[in-house]
Length: 125
Length: 138
Image (cartoon, rainbow over all chains, first blue to last red; front, side, top):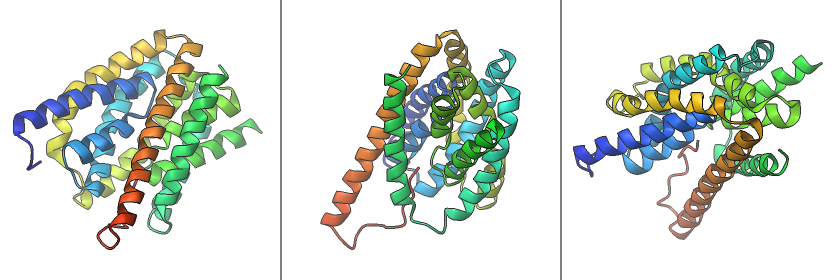
């Protein structure tokens, strides 16, 4: 954060946080996709640290919004149990794979899948 | 049989999440498009399913001193409020409408990241040798 003034950095963090929080609550995820560029591009945080810090920012946000969805009866518990089990197992596999395969190529595939899913959602509602 | 698919979809999302690539943004459309889960339910499931993994990741990252504590609080100061507001507003939004917004969000974010990746690739090709090949992507 050496290149920008403290006041400016604080404003960026507050404004960016507001957007990321809203996205994460409204879409039930995706806040990290906002926080990462906020940290790397605007606050000049080193990439590895930016990823790690993003998780620490998104966790409390997910707890808050997750509680709202849960108490309003929006999260189906049987599906949550099955998918959640898969996420935990997958998370371990992903963390191991991270150091073994080129994730630049995977990232590009991931972005394309995102765009295609988005188009399907817009077209088939 | 359906349980098998839920676990498989969770696995896919988890692998991406574990690699730090925002697995949640794919878990939600996989649940809604393939399994016909409602948009709100899929979003709630996504938020909660990633909590245990995040806790584990934070423990590891803290040990490796990768978490910038100074940044967290100022961002959270506004984010905690908007994350609750966003969740309440989302639950008041109709399913079809929310799907449309979520679809647009995916196209916008996916498009922005894809463009950034392409720009970086072109730049690193222009100035070979100075690029850092080990930079991570979300």
